[in-house]
Length: 391
Image 1 (cartoon, one colour):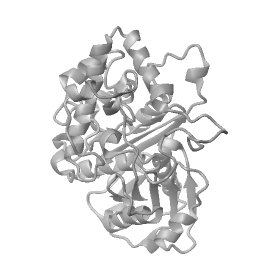
Image 2 (cartoon, rainbow, N blue to C red; image 1 turned 60 degrees about the vertical axis):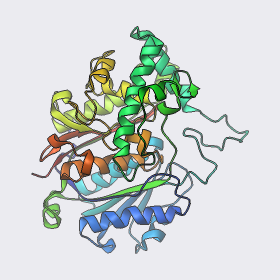
Image 3 (cartoon, rainbow, N blue to C red; image 1 turned 90 degrees about the horizontal axis):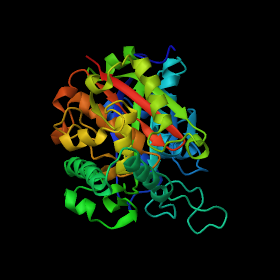
């Protein structure tokens, strides 16, 4: 497998604040994120030769981005891959640069949800539609996974809820240090455990918020990157694995791991040359749509042995000052989750960590060279992204 290792560099990124952005349109969000990315890269919009724009809501054309940025007939592709949408825009932009199709490419993801009728993830029709039953992720996937995980590994429900609560507390703490996060308030384990129930055992603080927001990245070749800045970020691997709902359809599905994540991570490890992720990775961003998702992902990525992630959570291994900090920006849990933007938001945090610009959230071991994990998980798709600093 040849891959794109060391063939692509990120030279600029932008990210809006996530939240209830009533005064912002879709175009405003794209423009804000892209302007920051362009300025960060030290280029002009006219230097962009191709772009990929992602939003999880169907029916939108690449023309939306062209109108927002006033581009002149460059190719713009609309990407939709639900929670993996933004990372997929980056994957396609990286592949285009690595293939020599273009030298400077833009990847952008956005979502405007708070003042729309699409307030839940997973349904392609509005909740009142009679065409299809809306899919409610807490009940249909993740609460089932939590209960099965507790049963499989002999974890008492109260202990399990407290473990999940510690993940929420960690992410709320990190989010409280982030001015762009949707939620910036710390919570306690007691608050998380006693919060109103959404779908047992997942309470309010086990679930991420639905947000508005956008994020963008400028990618180019490593040779050109050196002309723009010293602290560019090299892409070591980016992989996508898409399932066909095997887990709920097959009797062998165990509901205590996400096979798509396992496969994408394995391929990315191979491409990036990672053999011991727990020791080689300094900081990670993972898709925590629910606290149980983050817990299971620790094991899917090889950060924790199967059934043992609770021990690492209790020991604080994934906290900001722990052995392997995870979701240093607050994760989906606190930064928020505009479906089509989250993947690039995760890359944005790692980009800042690698440059030493993460402010109070800075992980000291992330400089000057680091590896990172960035899986974006959905029951049918997962992507994994790895990068290192430039020096």
